[in-house]
Every structure is written in structure tokens, then in C-alpha cells.
Length: 626
Image (tube, rainbow, N blue to C red; front, side):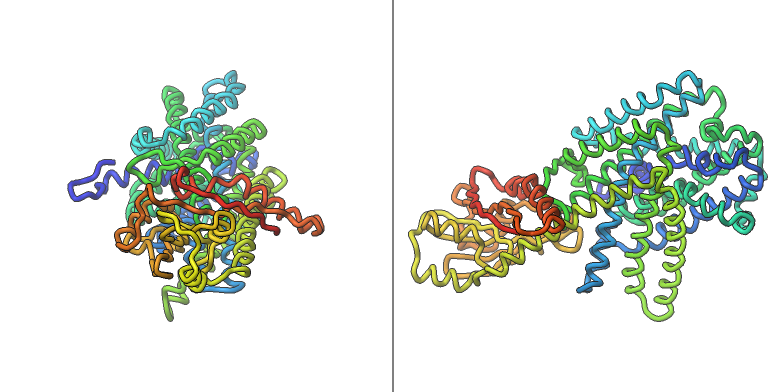
């Protein structure tokens, strides 16, 4: 996107970009939602079609338009959204068990998001490629192989970045939404009575006549809401105003026209339930529609893959995931990152889903559980955030409104739990596994921190004693990476014990992660003098920023004239802990310790993560029992 003369991106370009990044997932839901929701009806009746469409329409209005676009977007963490950003906001000012419970809910939502990131590429690409079966049933056998090839190409392209192809996302999705609206309007013109479904009485009548069937149908109708979390997660990229304008101005009308157009087609020909989306198109437009749908699903898949990269980086920064290699694929856009490990694991998971399930209908049962679980966690966290900003009557109104959202989310989630045996177990298993890994890493790091804190020595008195009775001093400056502010780092003790020397100057650097997405450059570092030749510095980065130690040393050098931090005169001293699991513990206490030790061994090296020049590093190894 090109910037205007004042440095800001034009509004039209932002709206176009939002179509490609924010609305790819929810924009491809019409490919499979109506088919899955009505296929169990055995030849849906007009009352059934109108009732389902009415429920679907009001779900879009209440859940997406009111809950997410109008309300949840207000809960921004300095302009940033998403489950982890909302969790950090909810935890602010709270302590004890309340803080722990909010952390747990946020991690549950993030864990289920990974399930969404696995299923979205599989179900979206499969549903698009299944359109070739409408062209000719002889092509049905090629659906899975073609989907696998498309997905392989998509994941292999991640390492090259999405900057060049990303410029096509917006125009392609604009064409996609215009096509959705156009096809829907064409079919509605032939069966205008389908517009009666806008009346909520059709939804209420269907609920009263068949409450159990309605409850079961919610598990399928929720597929129309997939991607709603992206509205919130991508707020930092485009801003709430752009997201709201794109939704109300184009996306919502196009989706409603498309859903109602499929309903109009089924009113005239119930047999079209085999694939109502592609059968909306005229015969001459079927093949182009399959091609356009495939492009749209690739864009939707790219959005959730990028989202998985972003969530993982936030989890690493916030201490819930081991350090891993993060590569930038764009010199200008900070958000364009590539995580090789995450990309490889996602590819294996997506291919396994495509090959094992084989169709979008089968995957739909697994999809709803991940989506509704994440939505429920967002509502609970919003319940802890939004009412805090209001008083009196407004506070009561917020509580009542979020209670309604919670009730709807609980119903949607409960409906999808009935499909655990049909595939819903998959995101549940993935979520439990990832939650276990994140909690294990966080608690393991906390245990190491507590152990070091229990054995710590005060830094000021220790350095003053060294100044009074100094060991051999060597030229240069030593930078000691310290986990706990104001304490003697193990690397210093090991250096004195084994090398018996101390550099002319010493800087003790502690890195902290704030509960905000970004920390301004001017607020990045806090410095204080410890002794005549040593200083303590605390550098803070936001959870969406990456620590850069050489950069912060340049900033410190400008503020402290006495401290010489020339790169060729500066050496870095780090402690590298090797985790040893205590053997005398019973197996049910040892397995998580073994898991933490495995994660610690496979974490990215500190030097690479903090961008420290490896040829200036001295690592001091130490063993720690847990």
C-alpha cells in the first residue's frame, strides 16, 4: 500500500487491505455453511430453509456486528487486539487467583486458535476445490490431490514473505465479495420470498417448533461466524474504524445476499443441497467461480497462517513459549514474519487433516469446536475488561450486554460439544496439548526464577566489595545478562570463579516484557549506577516487539557518557542453564519436568533471539535441578 504525502496510508487502500487480511476467513464461509446446516434435513422444506436463514442472519447481526464490530473492538490494548492482548488487559491491576484464572482463560483461547489455524486452510481449500465435482463427477477423485498441491505451494511460499502477493489480496477479495453479492442478488430476484427470513419471527417459530433440532443446527450455523476473531486480532494493523466500515459497507451485505441467494436456490430446487454455493452460478460461470474460490481460500488460509505466526511471537515474548527463530520477510512491514518451526508443524497438521477427513463436510464438525471455544474465551475476558471502563447505569448495561453474548457463546459451544466424536475431538486434543506446553514452560521458567532469587546476592553491596578489593581488571566492558534486577547474575560469579578477572566496566542488563504491545523508544530503558565502574539497566519491550540488545546498548551509550559500549570493546556474558530432573520424584511429578527440560534444550539460543553478536559472547554453563 502506498502512503500519502503526510505519511499516512490512504483510507481506500486501508479498506482494500482489510478485505484481504481481515475478512478472508469469514468471507469464504458461504462455501460450506448452508450445505452443512441444511444437508441433514433430507430435502429441506421452505419453513426449514427460512427458519435456518433467519437464525443465520441474526447470528451475523448479534455476534459479529454487535458483539465484535461494535463492542469487542473497544477493548483495545493500546490499539492492539487478539486473545493474548485482551488477556494482558484483563490481568492489569489484578493479582492472586483472579489473575491466574484470567491467564488460564487467555491461554485456552490462544490454544484453540491454533486448532482454527490448522482447520481453516484444510476446510477452505477443500471446499473450493470440491467445486470441480460440480463441473463433472469424474473429477471427484482429484479433489484431495489438488487441495494437497495448493496447500503445499502455499506453505512453501511462506519463507519468501507475502509482500508481493499480498498486494493482490485486497483486489481479489473485493472481486470475491462483489461476486458473492451479485450471485446472491440474481438468485433472490427469482425467489424474492426468501427475504422473509429477515423477520426474526421465522427464527423464533423454528426454535419453538423444533428446539432440539435448532440446538443441533447451531453447531453448523456457527461456521458462518468463523473469522470473527480476526476482526479483533487484526485491529492493530488497520484500526477499528476501517474494520467497521469494511464490514458494514461491503462484507456484511455481500454475505447476507449470498446466504439468502443459496436459500432462494433451494426454495426452487431442494436437490441443489449437494452444493448450493457453486450451483448458484450459471453453467458458463462455474469454472471461473471455482478458480476465484480457490484464490479466496488461499487468501483466507494465508490470514490464519500469519495469525499463527503473530500469536506465537506474542506467546514467546510474554514467556509462554520457548524462544524460537523469527525471520522478517519485509524490510518495511514489521508484522510480516516467518517462523520456520510453526510453518512446518502447521503444514504437517493441515495435510494430515486433508488426507484423513477428505471432505469439507467431515471437517466442518471439527471446525465449530475450535471457533466457539475461542469466542467463549474472548467473551469471558471481555467481561473482565469492558465494564471496568464505565460507572453506574453504563456499567450495568455493559454487564447485561456481555451476559447476553456469554449466553449465546455457551449455547454455540455446547452445541459443538455434541460433535466431539465426529471430529470435534481434534481441536480439543490440540488445545489441551498446546495449553499443557505453554503452562509447563511458564511454570518451569518461574521455578528457575524463584530458585535463582532464593540464592541471590544483592548487587550493590557485592560490587562495592569488589571495588574495595578488586580482582585483576582487564580492558573493555562486560555486559552481564541478568534475569533478576538488583541481584548478582550467575555469569558474573562463574567468571570470577574460573577466570578470576573483572572488566574495567560492567553493565548488568535485565530484559522485561510489558503488558502492552509496544513500548516507545524513549521509555525503552531505565539506568542507574551501581558502583564506580558498574551500572544496572532494565530494558522493556512490548509483547509485539522483538528485543534488540545491541540497539538498546547504543541508546544507553548516548545517555551514560562514562560508559564505553563500543562494539569491539564489549563482551557479553550469559548463563546457560542445563535442566536436570530430580530422579527421586514419582513419575506423575517427573513427566512435566522432563517435558520442560526437552523444551529448554530445543529453545532458540539466547544470542540469536536477542540479536547479540555471537563472536562477542561468553556463555557460562550451569546445571539446575527441578
